[in-house]
Each structure stands twice: as C-alpha cells, then as structure tokens.
Image (tube, rainbow, N blue to C red; front, side, top):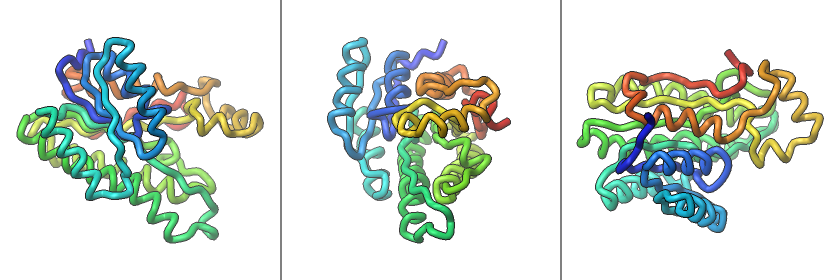
Length: 248
C-alpha cells in the first residue's frame, strides 16, 4: 500500500519541519522528490542527503514563493525536466503575527502573497501537466488556525482559510481529469516554531488538545502520503485534520 514508485513529487518548503518529514516520507514510499526552500540551503542539502542515505531519490531547488511568476515557472520546468509530476504538496508558508489594529497592509499582503498567491501559482503549473496525464494529486497544507482562528494571527488565519476554499474549488474544477485536490489541517505540531514557545505557552496549547500531547511532523507526513497514494483516488475536496481533536 501507498507505493509511489516512479512517481515525481514536489514539496514546497521541504527543508525542515512538516515539509521535510513529508519529503522524506514520500521518498521512502518510492517517489522522486523535489523539495524547495527559500533560505537555509544547508538544511535543504541535509534533507536531500538524509533521503539518499536511506535509499531515496531527492533534490533541492531554491524557490521564493513570494514571486508567483517564478513559482509557476519552477514547477513547470521541473515537471518538464523530469517528464512528469504526480504529486504537489504545497507546504511553504509564513506568518506575520499581530493584533489587527497593529497589522500593516504590507504584512497582510506579504502573508497572502506567499501562502495563497504563491501556492495557487504552483498549483496552476502542476495542473497543466496533470491534465495531460489525466491524473495527479495536489495537497494544500492549511492549519487549524484557518478553521478556528487565533488571536493575533488574522493574516495567517485568513491565508490558511483561503486554502480550504481553493482546495474545494480546484477539486470541483479538475475531478473530471482524475486530479484530486485535498488539504491537510495540522494542529499543535512539535516543530522549531513551537519549540520557541515558553513552557507556559506550550501547556496552554496542550490544554486544548483532547489527546493531551503534541503531534509530530511525521503524523502530518503520514496523512500526506495517504492523500498522495492511489489508495486515496476517491477522496477529493476534503480536509484531513491532524490535530489530536483540537478542532472537530
């Protein structure tokens, strides 16, 4: 089950955290993985090296998702160079947090530019290739914040909520071409970002998780692998919540 042998997958923001775990998981299942990064070339190289040491096939490509034209071009060129594109995981994202009264227009534009406009540009390029193949998997990485909101994260919440609407719209647009489009909505996941929180902040977050513990990037990657697989061929337009019951 969940065999991705000979398939090509692009994972944006794949050098660390959830993106890296997803890249490693897809590669372990047999996919040839192209992971993108905007900074942290060493982390990206380490991810590629780790995948290779485990018998997988991966490469890293620098990509700034804030530039939608470049995002579309990189995905199109990658698909052309490798001869196919079967899976696109849109994981790259940023957050500029502030109360709305202090949120600047340029900060809102910055977050939406990367998280929404850049993601749509990548999806647009992937769809062109997938339409010709009459098959494909597109997975948007949303967030529990996009579903339930969070004080001080208006811009981030808006961007992640937008991805859910985009997921459902694209799923309807391209179902006839056997292209499935789904979203994953992670909750409290143990990453570099959450490690930076104080013990009190982490405990406050855990108090809202019925399972009582933080998830790991591998938990999210497992959901991505399932959605990328042939076994998920009859699932489209859905949101898979990996949140320990934080939002139901």
